[in-house]
Image (cartoon, rainbow, N blue to C red; front, top):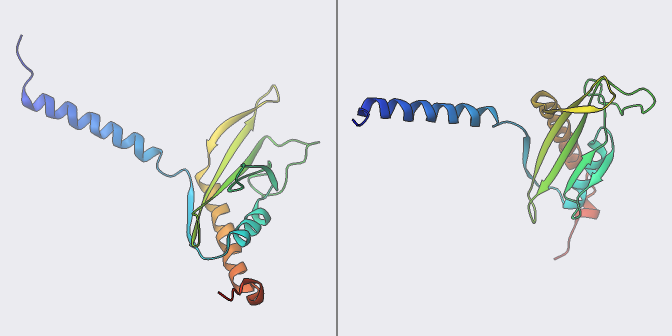
Length: 156
């Protein structure tokens, strides 16, 4: 049996590489990053808690990953349990780093209510993630300006 010609091999390699690149590019932006936050861990966590639109629904064992409750993705107001939304969202915020400066990862997910009343995952929402990350970035910047010098002062 004859070997395939070199140009067919190169073509197949190029096509498979292109397919992999398209798949990876489609999954590239699922979260927003806030990097080099110079605040203390407690200050960062306080600002994150205050910025979660639905309050904290779950927190990881080490306290570094917080998941919000459900909220309206348009108004960012907490979902009313008596009148559930057709589409609701939740936010996941993770704080990375063992010391200052910290990095923060923000992700927002949407879910849509099916006819049977059960919500189905729509996956991460890039626009909502960017909007919430900007809101958190602004809150962190405001905290930096309002911080109490005496409370953050360390003698040694």
